[in-house]
Image 1 (cartoon, rainbow, N blue to C red):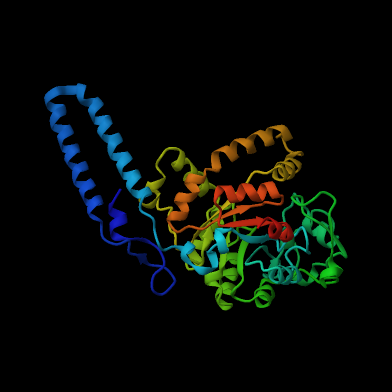
Image 2 (image 1 turned 60 degrees about the horizontal axis):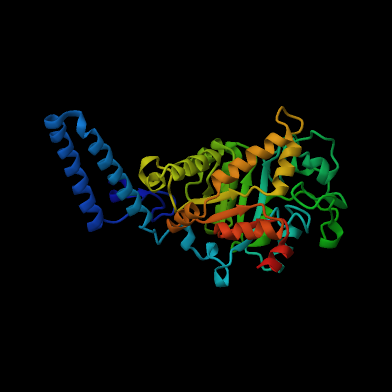
Length: 394
């Protein structure tokens, strides 16, 4: 339990690219706990030889005591460093969570566009969430494209089933004059591109997007392709625009993307992906979360962000719509999401993660009650499609 914590943990070295971050010497309380635990183990063996299996109960009780002591000690040892100590991850005045504009406020402006990003900047938004895909000519396009959502059809009027990876960037048509908002927005909502000066614009390249928003605007960049080339190109652009301190990258569901990021972009913070989230929450419910530092090598508060999906009514409706053509009926999807929401969201666990220097984002919160739930959970940033609603809430 203690060895990796005493010699250091993988983190960000002096060169900003990797290395080992020293965790400091063992404090006297920890050292005393180690000595007592080793002594108890030796005593157990001697007593077992003398008294036999009757002392199995004492063995179990002493193990439970050691486990509880170690967990309590780790839980009460906050880490003053980590990403959460950086200014860009700090909360608003009064401890209020900051806003993360999902797809650059897709419920109010043309999603994933420079015009929408500038609109969010004018509203005082500190963080943007945008999506990236790789085109056929190896350009990083700022667009969210999933076969189930048919976004190229919705945004540009292309035939359903057309994929970004099948097109060169210049082959993607201009945005439609009126764009239907994504499924998590208000039903029937359409965005007027002319109002934001985006009429006739095309899907932009990530290089252009970074140039427009500047290096101090936080960007949560989600890569919706598990592609190593895409990861390399994104990492190059992040470094080119000096955005390592203000960019978080990842794919919530892809282990491959996480592996590629750890390999090619160890200096750029990334989000926990789904399996890592499940491990974290399983450890929490088993009482083992404080041991995540050294047992599974999962913890690195210098480059990890916890990006939590909050199960809302809108999410249940949108996921049910996507699943309606599959074998899972909508009712079953709703039940599964409700169970997951009970499993995932524990304010005490979130507080512990934050105490270790890991920022926590909550998504996607488009109603006042959803924003209130994100604040109740203690998230540092609340992701929403509606900046105006966040301003009224905050």
